Length: 133
Image 1 (cartoon, rainbow, N blue to C red):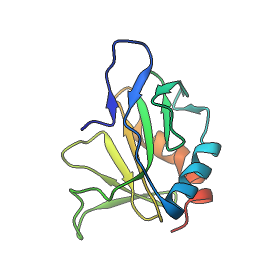
Image 2 (image 1 turned 30 degrees about the vertical axis):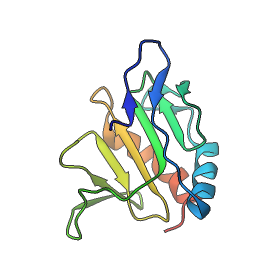
Image 3 (image 1 turned 90 degrees about the horizontal axis):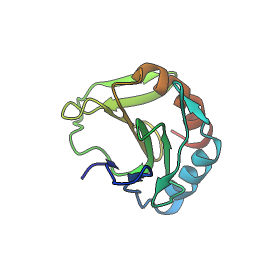
């Protein structure tokens, strides 16, 4: 199932994750300090409302915190380090990045309208401040 879903209205539809315990707490803290703007796109309204989701632009960038470990990630998978945050790029879905070296997994979908490196750099500090390794 896709994290960002097309809808008939202008409101973006995103399937929220359901983290529990410590993961839910750190994800709520992350949501509170995420930037208003990422790579020129402003945060926008999405449905259903969730403290574990943030969306920029018209769904061009979507973040979901507290997702499961990526199913396609193997023990030998390449992980990119971006300012101290390890990102796994799903080979089946190249627009999907998951921060994997933290106590909660953070998934970011980035459309080709945006520079993925710039988005990941801007997300590194909020992730490091709120989600321990």
